Amino acid sequence: MMKLWKRASGALKDRKTLFSIGFSRKTSFRNPDLDSAIIHATSHDDSSVDYHNAHRVYKWIRSSPTNLKPLVHALSSRVNRTRSWIVALKALMLVHGVLCCKVTSLQEIRRLPFDLSDFSDGHSRPSKTWGFNAFIRAYFSFLDQYSFFLSDQIRRRHKKPQLDSVNQELERIQKLQSLLHMLLQIRPMADNMKKTLILEAMDCVVIEIFDIYGRICSAIAKLLIKIHPAAGKAEAVIALKVVKKATSQGEDLALYFEFCKEFGVSNAHEIPKFVRIPEEDIKAIEKVINGVEEEEETKKEEQVEEEKSIILVERPELQTIITDKWEIFEDDFCFTCKDIKETDQHRICNVDPSPLPLIVIDEPVYFTHTLPDLITF
Image (cartoon, rainbow, N blue to C red; front, top):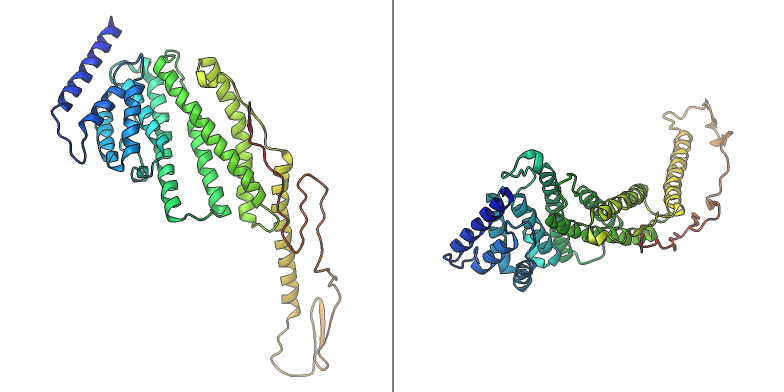
């Protein structure tokens, strides 16, 4: 009886909102037709999702950038007024779909125009809604950061069309890994959450996981080709962290998909096989780091020896200056060194043969090994 009352009350609220929209005029910040589609797509009905009106919203966004302001105004107004987890979750799913349109005008959004980081449903006891509240907060946190990431990527693509440097690629991969971590926090945790709307939202999350993890794997595969003995130590150190993080997240993803399958998420029915990054790839980057450290240490030792060999004489008096390692006879400027060892300036550092050989020579040797996609079915 209580459920029927809540549904009837929610439906009445939606009708009142739609009725008031019918009297509004179209302005630069309002579009009655778009407002109506948003209300239908974010209704209080928890038994279904109105994909027809959701796709109407996506068409408006793709058709013209002028529709972005009315969308932001309508969505923020809708979310800021509601205390229903159903409306809040449908709004987040709608925003997720808008971000997937990836149109140029999205760069103007930056962060989401509303805040659900502290959302709490106001129509039921916390003991019944805590799981839904946590789900919405986690979903919002991801979308808020994802919106900012997409906006930044679009801006950079238009300002700097040239290829990114290794440091820029590493930064981008780290941001994607951070987004993936946030995605893995979105999961139903309460026993009463096996509902149609939650399953639909989880389908969206799983699809996004495939997309982001695939982009991470592709970026790492390209990155490994660029990390070579001539690369800087800082780049190699960050690359090693990125690769190890990808390996760790692959294990987390396998567990996450097992959970989704047991929960009944349709898009997780076939669990992909997350392949580990080959150990030789990790060792190859470690060798690059160690090689750079050895070169820096050698340079420091040579610099110290050079400093020891320099002796300044202020007065031209005939005398013998004796140091710990040098004897300098000023009358004939004869310099002898007892402890210096001859070194070959064209020395080649050989390593054990492996699929990714690293040989320090005059010209840099690039990796020719290609990292697998890491996702196989």
